[in-house]
Length: 171
Length: 171
Image (cartoon, rainbow over all chains, first blue to last red; front, side, top):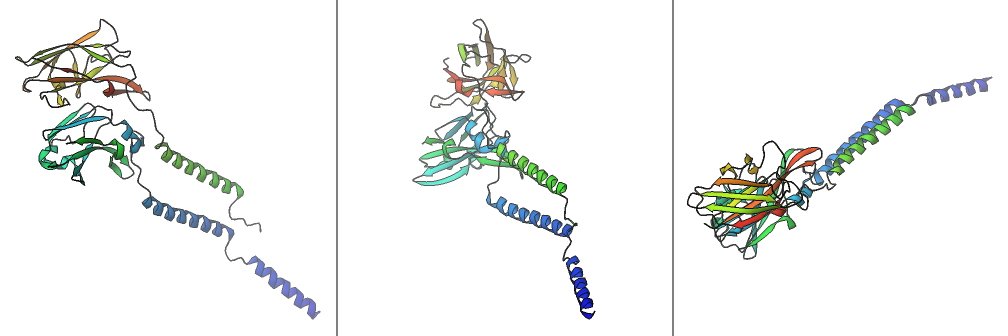
């Protein structure tokens, strides 16, 4: 009789232990989803800082628009002439000035002769002429890089078409 | 055991929703890297300077143009030079037109009402006159044809920089 009572008591305790879970399944599911969302957000924010920000123009990456830029340039007697013959507005122009093997890159607008550069950029068919002779001094070559204006998640942003998109002029 | 965290249906709905949202985000991002067709004039577009009459005493420049290509032309950009050592003509005289066209931005259009009005017809010529007072003696004129083209169901103004024509000027 005593044994039977002890056995019944043991089973009762066991049953009570099983029904007492640590956390309900709903709470664990919610916790799991919340945790995953937080981890993804942290990884995304960290990764975004490492990845180059995408600048878009004409609904495509601005690097692709560099292919469509078409301009002519020449330099004579200190005067730099530019004609935009393409269908993309050139927002600014950067000059890579080479003097005896040393390089420096400057924006045309910052030079004395570049003050007349249109504030909205050089639209298709527009021309520019400016005397930059005093600014480039004894330069051997200048490479002209077009700068385009695009949009990014942070608003309007400029992008310089580097590499083969530059036009080199021997002086 | 009957207490489930989330029902199977809700689990599926969440999974599918997250997948769809992520797919849309990735698609929007990747779409910007897909190259699209460059906006340019069709091959076979051509403008011919049939006659130039430069009166440097009265500073009047008359130009007669004809379409000798396969596609209709809307107008042109016009640039002149007053120097002999410059390769580029960078003086925009579009605002100086006195008759034979309309000003549209920094371009000349042949007709205000009809797009691409200069058709490839032997008898279809356009005569324009410009007052070039104040520019000195002009040495060169350059014309860049323009067209109105339908791009993505929208009419776009296109510069035909590839088929630029130039002519030397003599008093």
